[in-house]
Length: 182
Image (cartoon, rainbow, N blue to C red; front, side):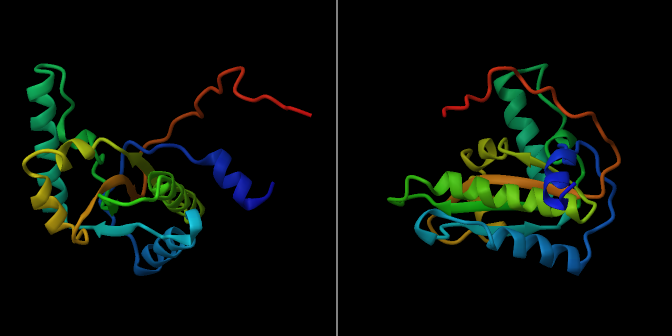
């Protein structure tokens, strides 16, 4: 099978990582994959913040768990269930104000490029949108600054990456998801 198609078929959302940090070569390959993503009108309205600071990621995760506990007492996820102890999280941000209606799609495409590149490198990944809750909170500006978001940028999506410690089966594909119009 073609290597790209195999990576697409084999990739799973990883919900368990060891603490081994990515190599410089792995990180460069992931960033190169992100930057190679297509964007509407080649606008490239994204920014990639690579966070490998364990204390900062743990602080962010605790803030997330605290916000969730306020919204749904007794049913909030533990702090370690946001990034699953991944040693690297790439936060993708974009201009908060822009006339590009495709900016979120573009960020998602870049995120998928990272996920497939990680798979090709033998790494696990999980795409996460839940960090948005923290960025919309009173702690959001703190993390935008800590993660080096450009002025006027806001969170779009994130991806946690590392060596996976758990695996899972492929998700079932629902019927009726494709129409072929000839």
